[in-house]
Amino acid sequence: MSDMMSETKRSELMSRIRDKNTLPELKLRRAAWAIGLRYRLHQRIGRVRPDLVFKRARLAVFVDGCFWHQCPLHSTIPKGNRAFWQAKLERNVQRDIETNQVLTTAGWGVLRFWEHDVEVSAELCALKVAEFVASRLSGIGIKQ
Figure 1 (spheres, helix red, strand yellow):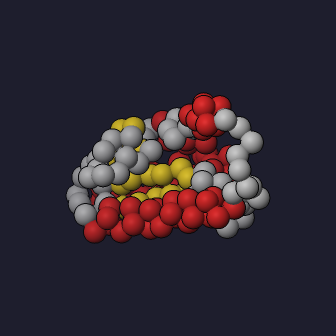
Figure 2 (spheres, helix red, strand yellow):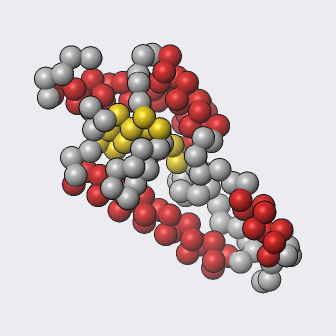
């Protein structure tokens, strides 16, 4: 099936899709800040740029979009150009697995939240981050 839009129009439309500072990411950041967590944004760790980085705790946090990362509850594959989308979305999932492996091998903790989890309760997600940070920092003898 061919694209109904011109290449220029499709490019313009796709350029509007955010890869950082999405609404769920902003909600998690606000909730984390409200409970006293301090973090870096999109800081490079090797070839990866997590949404939130807690350097002392060596924690990388990602907020994954349900469509782009194929959430088991909400994933869909567009009907048009199905083979392209299926391959693209499967590659995103594979890249997430590879990213997790690279970070954990390098000694980093990884937390991933689905956008719908953050939408339901950003505060609960932030508390999970806080627990992880506290456990990592107490494990290496750093007071919070």
